Length: 391
Image 1: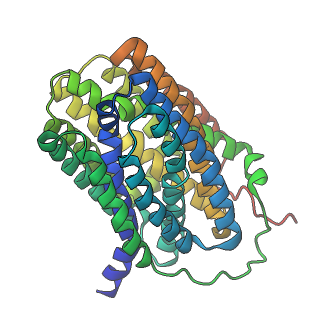
Image 2: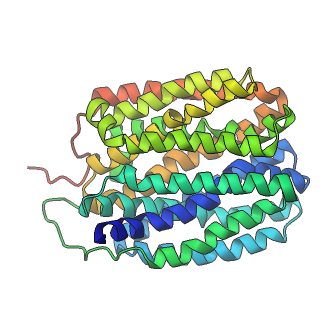
């Protein structure tokens, strides 16, 4: 029983975060459209939010790396998120949404980066499998998505903001429930290192490129997937079910993460995800048939979950424990954040010009990412990249 409670304390904050993220990822563009925002402007809002998150994730990650106060930072970010959602509710113009989005980017992305740092380190220290704890976040994502779909179907797009707010409110008590990490002990077996040491490492550069493009390739789906399916005549309950399905198969991938890593390795998981992306985005450019979308949404187990599991495993193996927070922040800020910011803007422009066929651009991005990961396979053999004393 003690073990169950300990696992619940580790998983709870992530579940609350992903409950809100489920609503925001699947229906935020619908909420923006309801406030009169155009497709190109939606791309700009996503891009600007991602760009500012690059700086904030790096800055907060650097503080966490130096101070080790991850739990306190998560609580502060939770309070800020609750406040900012209330401010979002009052915004109706593009300029107001842009300014609020910049502040939101300073809050929401750093919270995920810090939490994943806590989960990676604490699951290892306490004998848990990261993927099995992360499953609860995915289940919460499904719940948030489904609740949002039903809410939009019955009460319209304004209900989206309330579902996001529920998740943010729950983050605060569940952040307080996070176990306090063990005090840091000085480990003289690992040399001190900083961000520039990471960025000078060629394997880490290839890792950031490959995983960044893997996650950025979802830009058209996240920004315009729901809008595309609505235009094709699918109702909101069906659309929310499609989003829920994508995370349901993600859960299966997370549950089997240990078995998969043993067989194909952490870098192999990333390559698998990018390969799934080439297939998924190419097909989504040409069909909105429900049976096809069911199959293509199931590929989310590869395009997101496999890549994310591979990324967490790579960081855990290539860095000493004291460097995981910095590695996580670099991954979220530079790998997924900076790359996604550019691709979100590109997605808006492509969708405004080509509509559904903008997905083909995401297939090309997946090809480039796969090339980077294949190069990583050749230059990294499982060793620490930084934090090593030279003999």
